[in-house]
Image (tube, one colour):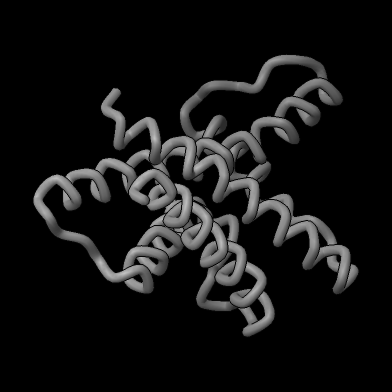
Length: 157
């Protein structure tokens, strides 16, 4: 693993923490329920792959409840690792993206990797989301991008 990838994975973990905090704050302020879309995604993916989640009904439900958020963490760390690799590669060549572009690209990639599978597996259709739904998804992902970017840049002082 290269230093850029490792730094990026750590940056992605920090960004994921910020995304989760923003999501939970939104839930607390607006009194909205948690989404179970990642749990549905895990269950649907397991079903389609022919890999049943083991255990009795309660155990399976509990495992899926754990695997759903873990899949989000995996996306966040993976996107961070990719961003770190690209960021480091550009820096080695004396190049960089503007902060606004890099933050937006990082956040958009994380959002796409979270939302596109929901559409592809028929769990949710982002085209049908209301503006408030988009905001509650986009704002935490932009925050993810900003924190991930800040951690990536933190060692360049």
